[in-house]
Structures are given as C-alpha cells and as structure tokens.
Image 1: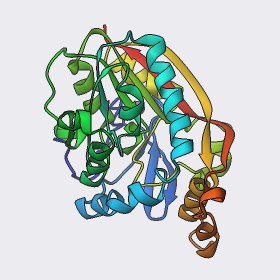
Image 2: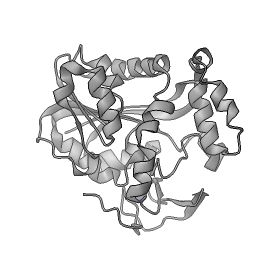
Image 3: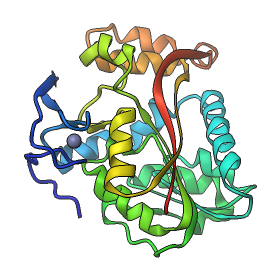
Image 4: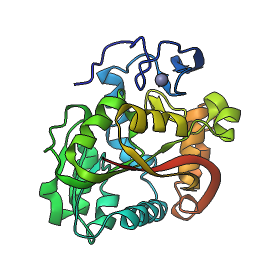
Length: 289
Ligand SMILES: [Zn+2]
C-alpha cells in the first residue's frame, strides 16, 4: 500500500535526490527531478482531502458533465486500443470513472474496470448492467490482480492522480501477459502551454493531480526503471466543452463570478465541443517484455 506518509525525500520515479522547488500551487509544493524531469507534489494528501475530491460531485459536474465530448474522447482512446490490441482480448480499465469507456469498448473486448470512487462505480454499473459483475471499487494502490492475465490495461487520465506511479505501473505490468500492452493518457508538463501557464495550467490541480510527466520521465519510468518497451508516444490537444473549460478556469481563478460557469450549465452551451490544440496530453503505448 502506498504510504499516505509525508514527503518522500527522493524522486518517486528514478530515486534521484536533486529536486529543486518548482512551484507552490495553493499551498502545495511541487519539485522537479533534475535527473528525469518528473514533477511531484511533495506532501501526500490526507484521506479527508482525497474523499473531498472524489465524492459524487466530481462525476456530476466536472469533466463527466458532457456526454458528447466524453464520447469523442473515448472514441479516440478506443481507436488507439483497436490499433494495437486484437478483438476479444481481456482488457482492464484502471480508474474507470463513470464507465463511459467500458461502454464504448465492450463490443470489442472482454472488459473489466475498477475505480477508487464508489460514486463512479455506481454510475459505471448502471451504464453497463451486462458487465456489472466485472466493475468494482478499489484504490489502484492496494489492488490485487492476477499475474499475467490481461492482454491490455488502460489508464486514461489516471496516473497523474497517483502518489507513487512507479509502484502502480510495476503492479499493472505484472498483471499483463508477456507482450501485453499498457495504454495511458496523461498531461504533458513539458509543453509550451504548461511552461507559459505555470501554476495556472489547466492540469496544475494539486492535490487532485500529484504526478506530472514529460516524454522524458515516461521513458525513464517505463523503459529505464521497469524494462518495458515504449511502442508509441504522441502529445495532442484535447476536445473539451465550454462547461469543462469553465470548470477548470474556476479551479484556477476562484474569483471568477459563480454565475459564469452556471451559464454553461445550459445544455446547449455546455455541450459546444471545442478542440483545444494545446498538445499537452500524452498518449502512450507500452509493451511488457
Ligand atoms: Zn527522477
């Protein structure tokens, strides 16, 4: 189990000891490893903070709000999965949220999924009654998975929420068959927009996000530390609706008048999907050797 304990003195990816201070975001300190470029929040959030983040409202009013945008994103993820993994395989989604991706992928694969948040799992089961038995509540960190069982594991926008990504990634690789694939998406901190925006970058939301990767630190984790093979890497923009963009803006600028996000709860406005060509989301495919 991941210790909820306090600051780890070294880099949680490569073990490096030189980690100059990078940012303080609303009281949370972040340090960047000089060796591998990984950026980590220094102090682990408390159980109370985590509970506050992932309670029901997280699935109702934030990124899960607009189904059309979510569907477009899930289609992109499914396209990536189908490009690399033959139909009919055993696929696990770690951090399945409200079950939207399970819904899109289940015609093609034997899907299973789990999530830390009971509120998410309840939604996921309601959306997927046919595979409700294969959807369960668990934190990633204490998960008990069979060895060498899955053809693929998907980790969509999850690894940035993890305190110790190295331990979790190692565990997930163990659950893959030899040659099995880990597919993930995560914000890319080594982009122009992230550098320009600093603490106002849309993904800079500690303690919701605790681990920030670049292409170099992804390589460090999976190739150097865990001896896996990096099959594909790309950094792309994101499709987002105005409601989500305003939700993010409000996290970054709490002084924004509350009525502005509320305007976008009007369905039509909220569902206007915009492609944001920020290039700050990485899509990565890793093969277990
Ligand atoms: Zn490092």
